[in-house]
Image (cartoon, rainbow, N blue to C red):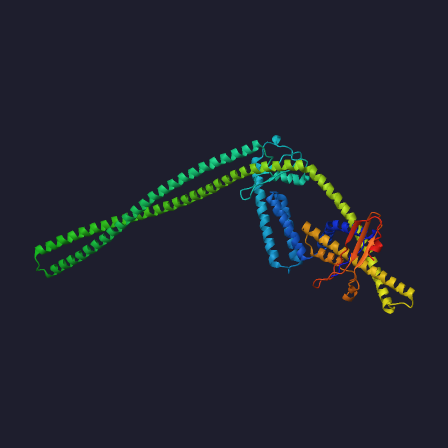
Length: 551
């Protein structure tokens, strides 16, 4: 690494002053480059740009939705959806999965915002006070409170005093969607209505619970009757089977008795007593058969009656079960309503706290407004100064580039002449002339190296300013590194000619002596040499011959 140290003349002091001004222009240069990059990106027409616009529009819609500005949020979502539809038509092959996913999300957001907007309008319509008590929306300077629907989190919209009112169409849409200005009376009225609603829901809940209890008791009674009917039906079935078996036995005995009587009559020799006994037995069997048939008919009638009662009980059980299910459904709905009312009460309390915070914020903003306006005016004036300095710096850089190009051409011409010239002239005058030309060329190279040192120093200062401002830009870093590169890169042999220390003295002022040193410092690694200029000012000693002191 080569470090150059030379005497600072009046011209060098001007250049060093320009370097300090370039340090202050760092932030403005960054702003200009960012503006150019943003303009170039805005002019690009590709699918990624269209998707980015749709995504940013959807993000704005989400922010408006969180602020309960559902009309504007719905417009943003629809705009984002139209952009994605246009992207599908023009660039169907570009990331179809991502575009489809984002389109589905935006469609869900549109449906959600439409539902919230309708619910909010219904709630606002129920809480609107009389028309004569509602202040004009154009002249109202108090903050407004909006109670959102059950499924959305409520938020507070604050309009400070002196803020420009929205256009008439937006004002009418906001007036139809937002609640009236908050006040203690309005909050108390809303709280009283909510409490009345809670009491009504609690009464309905108690009525439903009592109705469910009655239905359960009636169901238990019917179940007991059903069990009793089932037991009686089983008993009747058993009696019917028993009667059928007895009837069968009697018919068998009657058939046997009739067969015996017929056999006795055919023989003719039987005893009359035996015949009379058989006739009496047959008569008894006929009576028993008649009684069995009557019992079977009675059992069948009882069975039919029990079956009818069972069908009736089943129909009643089905009807009571349906009533119980309906009552349970009403009870569940009442529980949900009770939960929503509790949520509304909690949201009401939260709205009161947010209203107080918003009023405090409005007061603080109103108090800091003059200070902020003054700071904004100062910042604008500084920006104008920086723009002027940037223009001057760009012009100076162009002049430097022209001068460096001229010096480079002169150096090349002089180098070619030196290669052809002799080291010593034909006589002392020619030798002195060659020595003087060599010294002039050496001074030209030294000045160019000093200019490289100033550029490297300006580069360091700008990078430090970027670090201080927490700015990271690869494009700016590359451009700064390109500007800080040496105009003419010297090889080792050429740098070796500058290794000899050169001491220069300037005594332009009688009270100050300015000295500079040009010396060589070993380089580190593969990095190019970094020239450095150091200047020392010291009071001039009285009656001292400085030129002879350094010989």
